[in-house]
Every structure is written in structure tokens, then in C-alpha cells.
Image 1 (tube, rainbow, N blue to C red):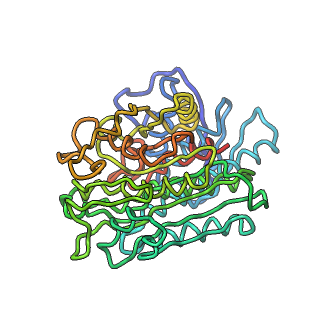
Image 2 (tube, rainbow, N blue to C red):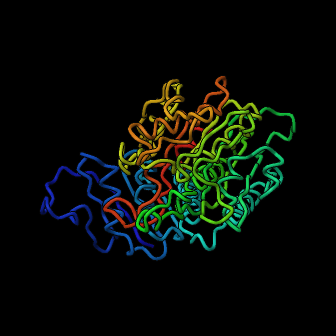
Image 3 (spheres, rainbow, N blue to C red):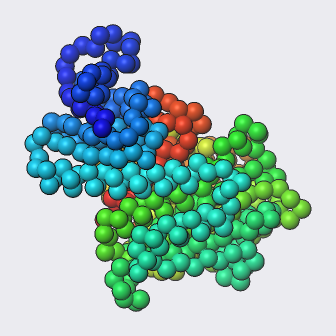
Length: 431
């Protein structure tokens, strides 16, 4: 058993220029020394410094609140999420400590599920494989409450899901719309409390608006939205949610071929809206449009979508925050508050009704972007405005642009690959 002993200290580190001053080691295990300036970030850095030293089990010991959040941050920085975890707080009973350990393990299992999905190679994770792995995992958690429908390939046209079909038709591996229903009520007519929608582009070449090799290298992560909302639902199920939740994943590969969609094509959506393609690399919003309309058909009390949608969001908030968009400011503040408590910060970016008009087309109701690099100024808000055209205005909706979903290389706060950042906050919002 390895130990993380969590202590606050006002002592000056041995050297302010030595990051190793955050941790020390002795026969009792690893001690994390926190100065109180930024405890979460200190924990993240300490976890990265200690990563690789933990091989079997970890027990977190702390004398201050919130031990669960700090324990989770420490655990998440470790690259090996298969170890066993325990949480001990000297101020709590052993029963409470056991309960805390269970909560921590459930959270880590959910994040591990998201990470494993995102980190798979695009060769292994086809659109159908993504939908099947998610359905299999969630059905295994609550087989009596979960049912799934897979709409594959040409069948998408029959159901009216033209955006997903057009984006995915360039690949020999067909696109898929997964509609999964978690209904613990036992009543098939029960209202849907929340609908989750995820972008599941398992590889994004950019299509004919082709990406550079550098820009394309990590595009296995472009299904991070699907992984994030699926993992959030898995955590809600593990925590015994009694709400009916609908999960919709829009899964496709965006590739170049003689059958791929092209610049200048016009897609007519199920709601009658026509969209001119001015950038085949702005494909995420095209598939999410179908997912959002499918979500609205269930008339849920809330719609949450997540996507690695725009580079503009990364430019705006960096990778330490996820960007959020909603016309409901109370909902935005709720998610920001939850994110702060879960060490998953969000930053609200503008979304006004006029953002719907920021991608004009002379040949269709709208274009899918602006014909300039990155979609031009305000690209992340313009993308959110495009999505808002496909959402029933009477349904509360929040769009999350996952700027912090993935890192090519490890940082001093995050391991390489998928981060899972956003899973806990979305799961908490489901409550």
C-alpha cells in the first residue's frame, strides 16, 4: 500500500524554483505539502511528480476538507488508473471513509472509461465500435434499465439524419447514430429528464478541407465529446440516478474519398433548414445538428451536448478550461460552480441570438462556417450559434466545447492523452 499524506503548510519550500518541493518521501509514503495558494493545482503537480511511483494501491490520508476533491485530483494525475484506492480522514468514521472510497472509485472508473475510449487508435475505434463499446458498457451497469438503438449507414437517410450521413459517407466504415435510453422508472411513458448529445468523430482528416499532418495527428480525440457524456452517464448510473436520461452519440469518420461530401454541397436537414458546406473540417456541428434534433424529439427537461468542436475555443480559454455556451445564465453559473467544486473549470463564452446569422450563405439558409481560417473571429460562438438553430428554444440547453479534453504530451498538471475533464461536472449536473 502506498500513501499520499495530504498536509497544509506555511513553510517555505526548500527552493521556490524546485517543483519537487511539493512532495517528500519517507517510510510513511508520499507527503504532499500544500501552501494554500492554489491547492488544486498543487495537487495536480504533485500527482504528476509522483506518477509512476504507484504500482499497487493508494490510500489518501488528510486532515482537512475537501479530501475527496484533492484525492481525486491526486489520483487522476497518476497514469495508472487500475490501482485500488482508499480514502481515510482522521476526522471521519471508518464507515464514512469507506463511503468516500466508493465515491472516489466510481469517479475514477468513469474517467478511466472516457480516457480509454479517447486513447484508442482510430484503426481500432471505428464509428460502429464506439457505439457498440458505449452501449455494452452502459448495458452492463444497468441491464434492466438500458436499451439502445443503432442507426447505421444508409439507414440514417431513412430516419432523416442527413448531416451525420453526409459527413460519414466518405469512409468505408459507416456512420452511426446511437440512441440509448436509461430509464430506471420502469415506466415507458416517463418523461425524459435530461438528454446528452456527444460528437463522436472517431477520426477527422478535415475532409477536402484537409488538415496538416500536425493538425491531423491527434484527431482520434475528436470523439472526446461522445466519451465525456457517455462516461458522465456511467457515473450517474453507478451513483443510482433515478432520472430518465437519453444518450445520443453522432459517430462517424471524416475522410476523403470519391464518395465524400464536398465544398459547395448543400444539406437539407430534417427540420427543413438548408446548409451550404464551405468547410468540410467544420463537420462536428453538422453531426451534432442531427443529435440535437433527436434530443428535442424526446422533449427533455435539459439538453447537454459536449464536443471537441473548435480550435477557436482553445485559443479563447486554453486547455485548462472547457468553454460553455448557453442562453440560460442561471444554468451557466450552476455549471461553473459545479466545475469549481470538481476541479474541472468552465468559462462562459458569448452566445446571442444573432450568432445564428454569423455564417451566411447566398445559396442556403446558412453555411456551416465562414470561408476563412478557423471560421474567422468569434468562431466558437458562431459554431454555438449554428447549433442553436437545431434546438427547441423552449428547452434549456448547454453546449460544452471541450478545449481541455486531450493533450499530446504530458504537462505538469495532466498526463498525456485524454484528460476526462468534464465527466464529473456533467454527472453532477445530471443530479
